[in-house]
Length: 448
Picture 1 (cartoon, rainbow, N blue to C red):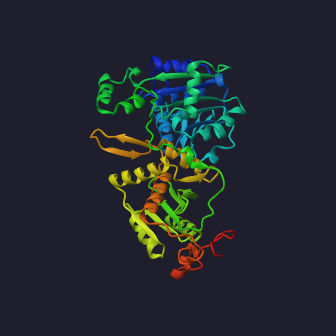
Picture 2: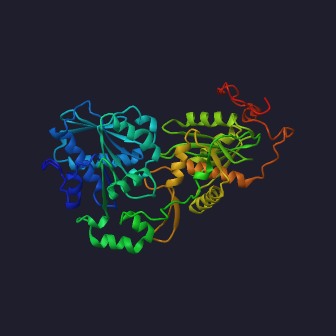
């Protein structure tokens, strides 16, 4: 690490180990408040400014986090350590956010939310922040190939989540020293190794947190139980044959809040097969309304279960007034526990299934794997995605399961004419706005 005085950053002895190491891949499992964000940000700045690396304005460099919200931490760290020399870097709040140094070298701050946004890059160096919360397919299908073209290097850092993830695999290889080409070096840093973190803070966390959470968040240790809620996810992922039922379809809809996504999950009420997962954000409510209606009219006798909490109550009224068959769900902590408990049981029993190649299926699987149970300091049990991650697909799926338990699916006989009305037929029966929305030309509705 170069002794540049322009950075407001003084590495402690364990951070120096990271800066001084020369392995191509550095994998760091660290506890909370170890100082990992400042450490890897300072390392990145040194790379950008040092002639040793010979970077230029064409060199592709990136800071990658599970979500845009978590990528902001890297931007905040960069602002902090360069505040005494603000002219050395300019941060452009475009999409993606880009930091440009005086020598023209640029760092792009990217999110793993959308794999397609990362395809096509040929990275010379990346920082992967909270890597254990980035899906396996992002590493194997996107990031690893993106580093291959230029023999790019990587620093991946995270608090531990589950054993067996891509991050855990690389971390284990680096610890065991069994990498044939010695490309990987792994580090383990509990929070207490940070000399600037008061001992009493760690001791208070030890006393107040459940042992499993303290082990993961402060000792940076993998536990056998992880924090996961759902068990048996893999047996729900199935290849063809697909659903051929002529049964009512349930639409679970979780509406976007702030940086989240609106998600629509369509499920067959007879075989409990997920038939469609729509996921979108940063679009107006009018556009979301059209997309919801598009899915609705292309469904068999659909019924919607919708998050009607907060602004969702207004949206429920809007959809109901348009003639859609919609049931509101008011989310409270106790209601969420009920929804997740029902979904947990269905998954454990293998009662739900989806095709592995279904659009957004990998995102659903990753959300289920990351979803965790936590206990607050007051003893309250909560179910949530880890801070900064999404759980929109999980909630939308739980609404579908709520629909399964709310009615007994009728027989799927061809003679049941009322039951097999399509969403298009229901929509047209309302007589409002008919013809204002395009239907999919290749859609096949039951009964014609």
